[in-house]
Amino acid sequence: VIWTTSGSGIFSPSNTLPNTSYIPSTGDTTAGSVTIYVTTTGNGTCNAVIDSMTITYTDAPVVNAGPDDSVCANNPNVILNGSSSTGSGTWTTSGTGTFSPNNTTLNATYIPSSADTTAGSVMIIFTSTNNGTCNAVSDTMIITYVSPPSVSAGTNQTVCANDSVVLNGSSSTGSGIWSTSGTGIFIPNNTTLNATYILSSADTTAGTVTLTLTST
Image (cartoon, rainbow, N blue to C red; front, top):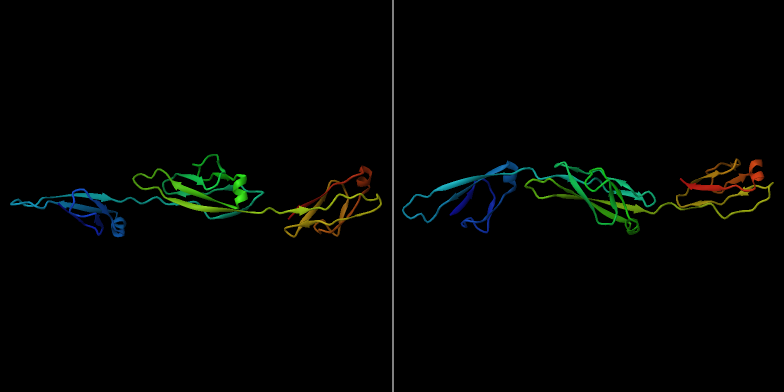
């Protein structure tokens, strides 16, 4: 036999074998279909005969795992936003975290493991399902975990009831805000890392007060 095509693909390993493979060209798949003909050879005194089949190409699945993301290691959960032209897909991870409520929900939340955040990054892969006759396709996003802020309010202090407290806070972000469990005030304000805390009478009556520095 000899195989021929209405398109521009090729036969592999040969177009003269009864059982061979047809590899379509881009033009074939773009056209959406192609007709394949098989014609007898070695016919002797007979006329050759021909038969044909039509191959129809459906669109391949398209998936998108979403853009890469960078999150803080102390707030590491990421809400995913996958899309699939098949309407469904499955999430997997190069790490050891989990997907909530499950790994087949397009907008699942990825909850990293401590190993993920320690590693500094993790790959999240979204793969199409319900592909029909098509091969599954995948897309990958990378989540990068950055170190969380660190702050220090300074050491505990013992002061006289008629004295004020000079603070010496530090923050890796370069800024922070002071708060108090009491009713004193911060001079010049509560966003100055080395502010002075003026005790209220309620503070001194209580005997202790807790000053808290929170990163901003």
